[in-house]
Image 1 (cartoon, rainbow, N blue to C red):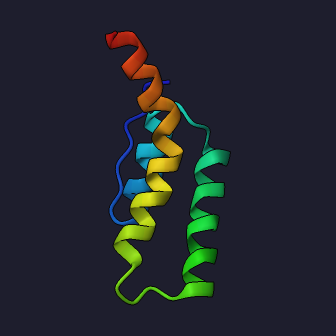
Image 2: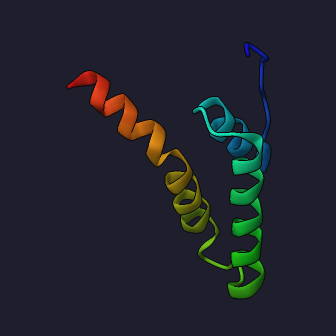
Length: 71
């Protein structure tokens, strides 16, 4: 599909996940995992790192595919 996507904050993360070829279900799972982590462990001084880790895990497949195309 060529549907334009946009978002801010968590919406931007979801858009990046979907634009990388993951499904909406994958984006929902990633968002729920991030929210659960924040509920259990708090966000003070760790939200940025936690969000980055969540996004990195979701985009790993996309990045690996891109690296393989470049080689």
